[in-house]
Image 1: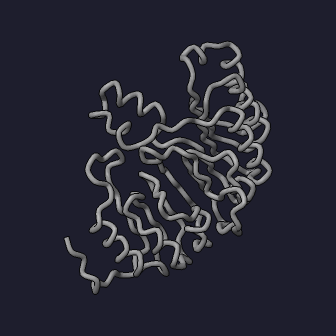
Image 2 (image 1 turned 180 degrees about the vertical axis):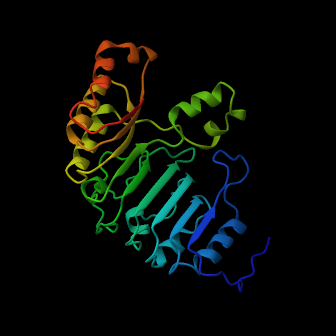
Length: 272
């Protein structure tokens, strides 16, 4: 497929470039890259929503343009490791961004946690209107958590894919152990690391209403619930994933803390 370089793209406000989440065919080809470059180079002034698989996305085009109207940015798939720039810099030209979702996983051979804003990296926080943030494989020392704006209402700190998806695949529902062959299974944060992140966020986002977290169900797991209850008084939905034996949810202490979580806060929905 040849992309004609003179093709004119109308002033789009929404652009979606989607692919099956666990697609086994090549997820990034040169024609895909060329097509996305052609489109995105022509629409930065008008685009309000960009939803795309991450592998063929031309990050240099994103970084080199101003995106004054962009409100929503959703990327999912394999993390690009060759750009050399953190996302706080790559996406710094989006002053009106309200929703940022990065469902990203490392390829085989990777596996490191990548901070959106790495410690020591010089940057100015670029998204003053941000309301919804979803990041995967969160880095416990990410400087982003020190700078979230008061406008934040929804925060999701999870893994992509969820660790249990790899176990399901090995048992047969997904074919050929594809995920294990191309992606590194994520290693969830410890409960203490999650607590540290939540405490840093708490004073920045006092009006948070929705929270999703994923972490190891170690001996500090109940402290995560206590931290949530004491730090986010306006929380209305709390969803958490922790990884330990099924007997956890029959433990009287666990049940007691879960059922009492809504006392004193606005919680209406709890999903475990």
